Length: 249
Image (cartoon, rainbow, N blue to C red; front, top):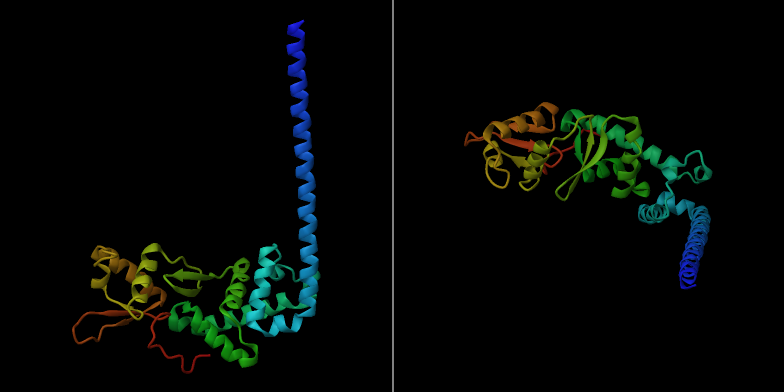
């Protein structure tokens, strides 16, 4: 009799675990549905907010950045929504037009900087085109440039140390070239081959020469071989504080 009682206990325990498992699944489904509903409500409320503040979103860069961050937090991308319900707000069109302006500036200066421009310089040039009443922020520019990725062409924002550089040519910045640019950043945008062979890089002279020649060929670096001490100085155009943009729009 005790054997049957033991089997009964096992069966009862198994049924208890199954009921607990089914209850857990139901609670998880219910919780998921609640979360989905909350997300839908947030999206609806955010759209209402955007409709009410459309003009401010399009005209105030600080307000626009905060709005975009709210969108990011709940997984909405107005830039990818030009044919959706968000298209009527004009946010996607705003960034599309800004992207065109970024391309115009980058192409106009490519012969001068080799397709590598400081984001701050791009902001200054774009804002000059747009006028003070339609100024854009770094966040605006980064989002606009990101929207160009599907089109190819090499447009992207690179982070070199504490600087953000806009690359507008379809070429990879190798780790060696990136390290050279990083060295220049700490030296007012300039560097020499001997500097690259010293710490922290400690490149072999041939490696330093190869990385430098790659940057020179791309037009990213300018060469100054007229120094009195006879040492050639290389300037990363995107970082060189002495660069003037007179005559280039």
